[in-house]
Length: 89
Image 1 (cartoon, rainbow, N blue to C red):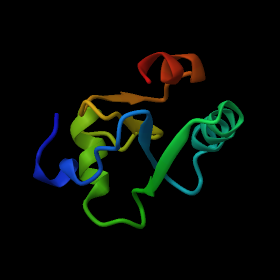
Image 2: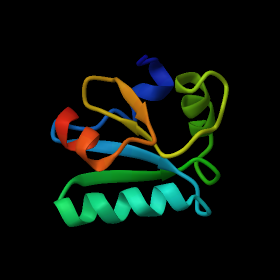
Image 3: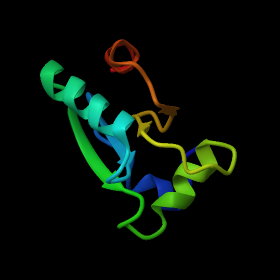
């Protein structure tokens, strides 16, 4: 899934990039859970950072579905449970 635009958002091993919006309740819940678990993440609001909505669309069949998490191996998952995030790290 990693193209040139996406490559700058691929995180270091052991952390994730989390694409969000400011109004997304699922994003807020997942951030709280990741904070509680001590999982490090970089938050990128797709409404504020140009070109990132297209990254999310590419992962989600043209939809801007958040939260979308990008992992160090370039793979992504949308709206995961916290145990799925832990498992992937």
